[in-house]
Image (cartoon, rainbow, N blue to C red; front, side, top):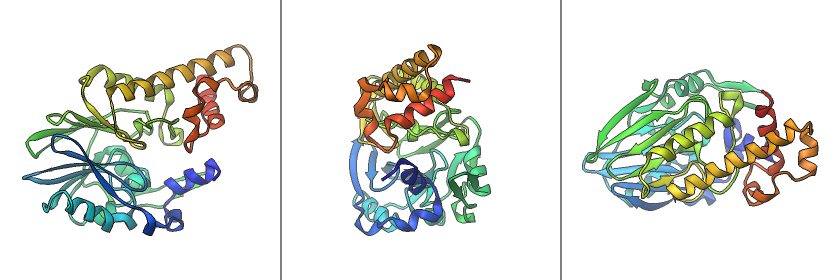
Length: 290
């Protein structure tokens, strides 16, 4: 599939119906402490379970809600108590309209604004979300949910993947859910139309790498479960590709020349996701030129 179509499929609500969710399998993996990770279609879901109930981080697509519930029942029979959104994109918040009827949704202020107002940019239009899908508790900088024997901290990291990104810290379990500030093993989608920035993303990931313990487990927004070493590898690629494109631009080369010269060939394997190498060069070139 072409990159543009994949991005539209991921983030434009009217296109969700084009996916065959009947073939998607939602599976649970134990991470550490009280935390699990659910995979299916869309962003990885973080799950805290314990005597207080379930706290979920993101909820993929609405049609997958029954499968997500079944996967949760395989872990615990406790009810959902809170839903945290890492950002507003539909592959992370599509299930809000279902789960929001069962428990309060918590998110950074900009997430509610974008869900409530909808977004309209060329090639990608998302209508306003229904009332049930909107966060009912919002925060600007950080908020803590105390559940299942630990503090679950949601911290706003500005202008990374979007302008409403939250990274979730399960403080006792020693687990971090990065949302889409971490694409494990492939180039990230940086939503510059929604306040995202490669430079900001690099700063945010560096901040997390500098502060989390060496043995922390890291849940990426997309890709397999990781750890601090995996997050550092992602950061190294962000920095190295930025420097390579920036050097070429400063040398007077055009974006097309950099593509032809395969300036990012050393990191070729990272271009096998839905953000291909040429698209990543375009993203980097545009921002380094500012």
